[in-house]
Figure 1 (cartoon, rainbow, N blue to C red):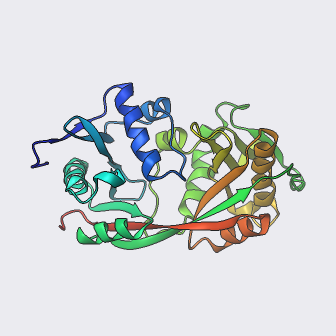
Figure 2: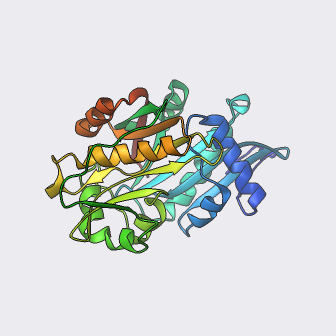
Length: 299
């Protein structure tokens, strides 16, 4: 807990709190999509803690603690506005978030960094690199014409066919999530699959009525001309037939038709096939993110 009497760390409760939380994230990560207040409300759960750090009533940072999608892990994300760093706010936030994660019964703390200062801060508290993600960006300057889908494939959106995404969890979702190139297997419940992995639009490839592929876009409520690619994946028995290319191009075509000028995606560094596909489609590598972990009991 903070020892500075002028520093207050308290949970987000009101919409104004959530909007202030958003504005910290936008200031620290201006190149990332930040979800809306409504989406933050919808994604809340008993395991998640979102806090604001205020000094003398002024917001100076925020934090997020939650159960990680990586098996056995809990995630902590302290962020401090640049002009308020090096005054103990980050340390106080981290300690507060770690105390929450201790209540979740997990063994590992997880976090992330994408600049030297964040890495140095993380190393001070025992975090080490476990994975890397690569950001690739596509700039739109005209229409995109998708290649034809494979024979016997129908492409719809999850929004047109309510229930398809939920039904795809067992046969499709668990398989494609198991193939992520990460140090620890993903552990995604059906509820999280529906709540956190579905974007709008989400294109679904159907074979005999079953989902065998997906690709979508998460629109940016603050920058309406840009979006982030959602999960792009193809079931193992349908790989190597051009389906991933078609689905990715469907998202780019939709983006062009709706006036977007930039689409970006994050891919695990170890997923060479998807990174190569993105490069072939015209995505350029723009930055690298570092995924960090440490045992919860350390530090």
